[in-house]
Length: 424
Length: 136
Image 1 (cartoon, each protein chain N blue to C red):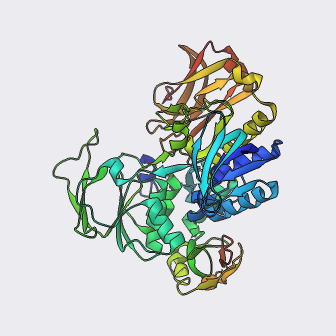
Image 2: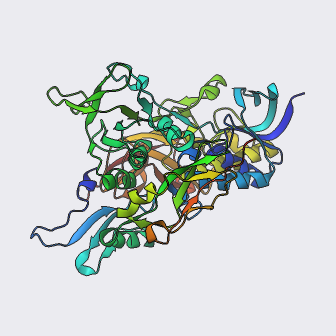
Image 3: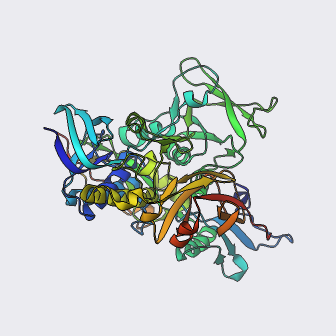
């Protein structure tokens, strides 16, 4: 006999815990959260810096504090937290195959499933840096785990490639632990990290940020000995004659995160090549009925608070699905969101009007930096609504609310685009 | 980040100290603030009161909340994360972190437990930011 749950959540990080709490608040009784690590909390456990929770808890918390609060809330729901357990397979009829050292191989079934597996880091292999292959090259998150949880220092003189938030945070962390951080190197003409992290992690410690530069060679036999850095042109190609050598023993890579969707793909769930996460509807339901997704497995978020908000939405929808089965809204008229000019991706990718009679939230990223600008929603050539912004950047997720009447008035699809404000 | 280059620009065209531009670090929103020294450090561009306070403080007496880790024995992990329970003056950050060298906690640790009291006479303390159960 396979054990039956109302809602099964895969992943016990911030997304999974929030989804489980929300499923409970919305009437699901038998809930399970399956986590591969020995403790819940996911990546928050190693994010010891502060800056979490300002939206959701209205106070500034560190990662472990944010995780701790959710662990306590989850504890009160009576949900089963299954640790040290690896999910091997999810099927479209909502069976979950998993394995752990205590119970071996087991299969459960669920009324609704929430995918909350998070994301992983891009590696040296993903960006193909030339050079030798010495030790001392780490992804920033791996270094963060070594330093903050395992208690190992990763090096003495470091260069950071990429200006993602984890790289910036680690620049400060290594400096405070006594290492010298020589530079942060970013291939784009702008930083992908939050402005606050540029200020308090680099500028506070006098660490230079080289925009439009990249590492073109890693040198060293056994351990990293130096890196070669070059300026890049507009097509991101290294410019000859701009070489700089940094003598260092460590390179940290903060070059992007990829949603972790092996289970999703194997289940035959539709993936959006832009987000590399599952295609989702307005309530975070995937292309498979009764299977929902939330957090960084869908798209990489800037803030855990936004992960929490999205996951609560998914948990609520999962509970409703588990209790009521397929709702009328599932089959209601859907409006595809088309990415117009300067839009890198949107979440959701489609909105079913039966679930969005009052309004629908759309999250997206722009492709480049904007000053005074406008976001436009169009039905074909017809402008339905525009939103003003003073500043937009690819590193900062944007959010708009589309009123229900505008959604209903659109003929088939909605196009979202961004442009400079013409009045200036 | 073009706007960041303007940060800490101290003078106007006449070389007179006037408006400082900076990015608010109170939350991840990162508001672009302007602080006018000639108008008693009046702050504009902030989306919330925390930004006004930050802008004023950042040009008069910059402070930071500091996070780090300390050694812990008898727990599943080797390190316990800590933070200052309030912000401390920015010039004291490195000295404050140095106080954590040699501190060894014993599991169990509770979130909020004091790790170092009265950091460098500031009245702030380092506190643990997570529970660490004793491992068998």
